[in-house]
Every structure is written in C-alpha cells, then in structure tokens.
Amino acid sequence: MNTNRPWWRLDGFYIYAVLYLTFIYLPVLFLPLFSFNDSKYIAFPLKGFTLKWYEAMINNPPMLSALMNSIKIGLVVAILSTIFGLLAAKAVTRYRMPGRGPVVGFIMIPLVIPEIILGISLLILLNLADIPLSLLTVGFAHLLLCVPFSMLVLVSRMEGFDKSMEEAGLDLGENAWMTFWRVTFPIVLPGIIASLLLTFTISFDEFVLAFFLSSIDQTLPVYIWSSLRFPSKLPSTLALGATIFMASFIVVTFAEWVRRGGVRLDSTSGI
Amino acid sequence: MNNAVTLSETRLKLRKLFLKSEPVRGYTLLSPTLLAMIFGLAMPLVVLFTLSFWLQEYLDFIRTFSLANYLEFFQKPIYVKVLLKSIRISGMVTIATVLLAYPMAYFIAFRVKSNKLIWLILITVPFWTSYLLRVFAWKIMLGYNGVINSGLKSLGFLTEPLAFLLYNPTSVVITLAHAWAAFAILPIYVSLEKIDRSLLEAGRDLGESAWMTFLRVTLPLSLPGVIAASLLVFIPTVGDYVTPSLVGGPRGIMIGNLIQSMFGQSQNWPMGAAISVMSMFTVAAMIGLFLWGTHSYRKRVA
View 1 (tube, chains in turn purple, blue):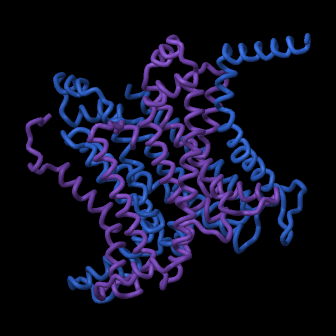
View 2 (cartoon, rainbow over the protein chains, first blue to last red; view 1 turned 180 degrees about the vertical axis):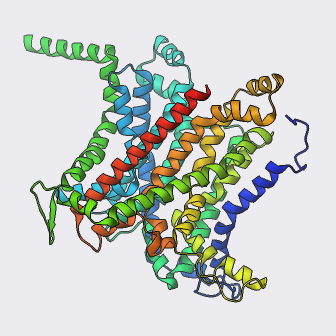
View 3 (tube, rainbow over the protein chains, first blue to last red; view 1 turned 90 degrees about the vertical axis):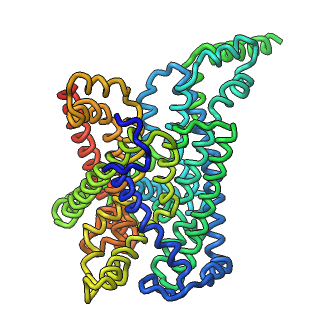
C-alpha cells in the first residue's frame, strides 16, 4: 500500500471523503445560518444579520425550563444507568453464571425494538397502573434505553483487562470493596466516562419516549418538536440548537485536550 | 443464647455461600438492572401483547379476549401496506447508508495514517445537533424556498421552484440516510481496523489483484461490522416517527405514524398495540432472515 503518499496527494478516496463530509455537514450548517437571519421564515433569500433570536432565546422561560429539565434528566439517567451498567458488566464478565446469555439478551432488548414500541408499551402499563405521567416516567424510560448502551461500553472495557490484577488485590489482603475501588475502578474509569457521556447524550437528545411519557413538564426535544410547528418560535430554537452545538464542541475539544495532556482515555471506548 | 449462636452461624453460612457461589454473587450484582428491566421492559411488553387482544370502548377497554384487532389489521389494506412500505423505506435507507459509509470507513481505516481520531470526530460532529433539528434541516434543503430550489433558481436552471423534492418517500430515505450516517461508519470502521494487515499483504503476495484481495479478504472480514451497521440503522428507522412526520407528507407515512395516531387522534389503544405487535414480529422475522442470509454467505466465502 502507498505508505509514502503525502496526505495532500488526492486520490479517489480523498475526494470521496470530502464529498461525504459535505453531505453530512451541509444540511446541518444551514441551521446556525438561519439563527442569524433577520426573518422569522426559514427560507431563502436571506434577509440580514441579526442577533435578536439569541436575545429571544434568553428571554424564553418555557424553552429554558425545558432545557433545564433535559439536563437534569440527562445527568440523573447518566449516573444511574452507568451504575446499573457497571454492576451488570461486572457480574457478567467476572462470575460464571447459569443463564448468562439469555439474561444479557433480555437486558439488550431495548436496543432491538423500535423506540415508539417501547414508549407506547410503557404508556399502557403506566395507564393501567394509574401512575401519572411526569418527568420521572420520562427518566425511567431513558434509564431503560441507556442501561444496555452503558453495559455494552463497560463490558468491552472489563473484558479488556486482566482478571488476575483483581485477584492480586484480593490476595494482598484487600477486601472486595477496596479491590474494586483501588484496582478495578481506575482501570475501568475511561469506560465509565465514555458511558456517562454516551448515556447523557442519548437521554438529552431522546424525543419519542419523552413525547409519549411526559405531561406538562417538557424536555427540550419535546419543546423543539412543538416549536417546529409554530414558525414564530422556530428561529430562537435554531439559536438554542447552535448554542448547544458550540457548547458541546467546546466540551469535546476540551476533553480531547485533557486526553492528550496525559489523562489517557481509550479512544475506542469513547466511540 | 443458643438462639444467638445459631443465628450468627446461619449468617456466617449465608456469607460463606455468598462468597463461594459465583452465580449468587453474579445475580446479586445484576439484580438492580434486572429488576428495572423486568418492571420497565418485560411487564410493559406483556401488557402490550395483552392489550392487543382487547377492544376500545370510548375511554375504556373491553377486557375480554378478541382477535378483532388482528382481523382488522389483515382486512383493511392500509396497515399491511404501510408496514411493507416502512420496511421498504428502511431497507433502502440501510442499503444507502451502508454503501455510502463503507468507502469512508475504509478510507479512515486504511488510508489515513495519522490523526484517525480527528477524522472520527469530524464525522460525529454533525450528530451533536438535535436529531429533530437534523431532520428539520432537510426541510430547509428540499423545501419550496429551500437551499436546492433557491440555488438552482439563482443559477438560472429553474424559473419555478420544484415542489416534488419534499414530502415523498424519497425525501424520507435521504433524510434518514443522513441522520443515521455515523451509526453505519463507526461499526464498519472498527471491523476494518481489526483486520490483520499481514493478511492483506499475503493476498497481494500470492498474486491477487487489489480488487480481488478486497473481495476475498477485506470484505468478508469486515462483514461483522457491516451486519452491525445494517441492524443499527434498520431497526430504529423502521419505527421512526419524526422523519416521516416532518418530511414524508401523506405519501411518506410509515408504521410509526399509524401507531402514534392510534394513541393520539384515533384513540384506539388496543389497535395500536396490535399494530405494534405485528410490526415487532415482522421486523424480528426480517432480521432473522438477514442474519441467516449473511451467515450462509460467510460460510460460503470462508
């Protein structure tokens, strides 16, 4: 293979890669563009530059409360699902258990059924059990969706390291808890961080479950959905979208910078 | 006194059992997850299945066993038609996404020598935008006063905007193929990255052309990634509700819209449950068929 080819020498693959990136970036770049456009209609031609939609975004209590709801649910779900995922991953990677395969398969079911079906079956159950819809029910649904993802990430991380390190800890007289804390935890930490980021992202962006299982208190995606139907609300929603995008860009850049600065995260577990 | 001794003895025994028996320890660790999944997954699915055999009467359910919903499912052509259309749309999305993603994943795995991570991040960046806004972006692209129409008009190719770009099954396919692109690239990339490079050199040394080496070594070895990518794209898109509602128009509706309408305007939950059950079985059958097909292909190549 052409190992000495300088990176700027174009070949077919390079051209393809650039076209592909254009395809995935182009539509998304129009969103921030229209958040600076001085018209409430999301259509060409562009009118003029304005920051008024960002001002409207800050002065929009329902949107901000939806944003706060999503952040709260995302944080709680990320922490809980990572704890659940960690316990489950430890169980299936460290102990010989009868029925392990079917049990793992059962936990993974949310990955293989369409979300809308997960949502309506929870809705039916809550309805029959007379449990009112709230942010709690949304959070619970998100937990179900996130645990399999967390478990997948953590199982691959736990399978990667040597079981004998834990045994050494136990042999050297540490109890099980201290062994976990001083041996397992530091090794699994990159997996835990990956799981927290992944589950937060999933919960923060999840729409269908929240749409079926929330009542008056909305999450951000449910708010965005309602704003897609009212053109007057739309530009400030685009402004919020652009702001969140910039914020996550800064967070990821910062995380990458930290990673290069010595706190080595495993790149494969971060994906 | 005696009692206390036996009590502490049994406690000790239990402790010993706990420490000795791996299954007991394993299931203890699993129990929170398992309990949540039983309450939040197994029970709802059982209830969904049960409800599909009930009937709706105004705001109440008639709780006697009936096959009426399933009969309606097969008698009224709309249900089967929309389900088949959803599968066709998702199938096209899956094929398009995987075919478009493969060369990109191949490029990152084999052609990019340094900074692979930067390329992977570059690919995931657009997906940090809200899913809803990403789908909405295609309304801006394809709409009557959208990017493509305005662009073509200003270049002088058009006098009137094209109305057929949006609100049809094709616009649903394009939008979904865009929205799920990263889910296809990453698993394919991982499986390509895992391939032992010496196998490729061996192929070339033994006189195969680059293309034949690809067909007989790289492609079969990357198949697990292709399969994972296909499932990761196919399963969620079959039931997608957002994209057909936003860019599908009346001709682009999918099974998710039908299910939602049964829980919304139509207020017929049992019928919605029956449609869901039928969709789940159909999707499961499709996946089974797909896995069987790829399995026999892999056997033939290997």
